[in-house]
Image 1 (tube, rainbow, N blue to C red):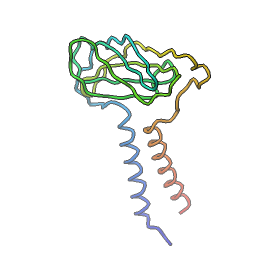
Image 2 (image 1 turned 90 degrees about the vertical axis):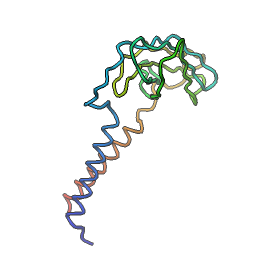
Image 3 (image 1 turned 30 degrees about the vertical axis):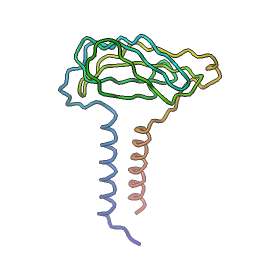
Image 4 (image 1 turned 120 degrees about the vertical axis):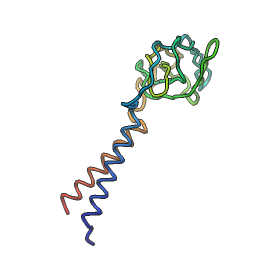
Length: 166
């Protein structure tokens, strides 16, 4: 069975497009015209109950339309993140992160966003739970985005190897 060169070229073209769109999901847009919040939320407390952490913070003084909460098992707090919309309110904000491993130390940080622009990170706070010393100090090293990029890279590599042996 002989495969046409046009089919191979189409395959490579689609793999490159897949890689481009996967990469564009990682970072904020280069052509963002929004003004980033100038200050960080005042992140002051975490309460932990079973497998849920509730974070408490005060909004920044600059304009914003949402938050990014980043957390993980090391002090960089960058293994996982969630972005959610939120307008200005009076008083403290709270946000609950569910489905955490019990008896595990987690580190958290918060930043405000305005459209596609993100402000500075708050201080990093951590839970200090008894019994966490026997657990690993680092979280998963692969995120869904990283797996998608690695998969697209393998598709491109496979297409190139196919061309070499055609």
